Image (cartoon, rainbow, N blue to C red; front, side, top):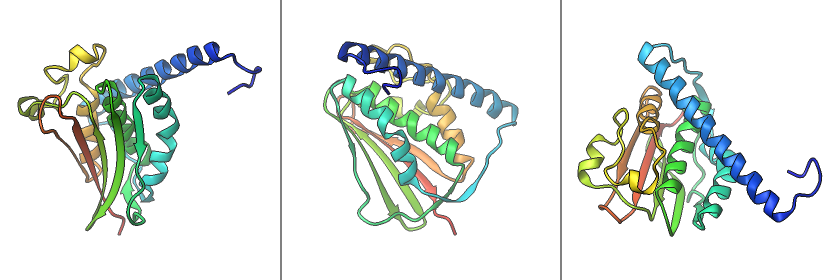
Length: 201
């Protein structure tokens, strides 16, 4: 941020990589802690009745803009067609899941785009993260949200994944009354992750 003087361009690039690596480590630690809490039944939720999804996406946008730029991908944050109603959620845990899904989209996309959009349907708000990446086979979709599961081709693109993020994310979303699932037209045809959360009453 320049607090210690102006950074040279090559210095700033190195600092950005350090920053992004640190963010990934934070996410890994959170996943491991959440896994332990889920399996011991000690995970607590701080549910709020007026959470705005747009605020969460705005909070994480800067971090993922840097990651997308590093891979020369286009990160698109599409505004909703109409204003979204507030939802019922644990804001921090929802933020974790949204961050993890966007991070995965960037990891497994080598060229093209990652698009984040939102919409209001009936009594739910949907967060959709779509990419032009490697896609997922129908076989892999069946086990995608199980513990330590990774798509059959994912290790060829990104070797450092633990297979915990989506398992933890599914637990975090479903425990808040929501739903998370993935869609893909097949290998090489991109992926869509959809998170659905209930509207506040």
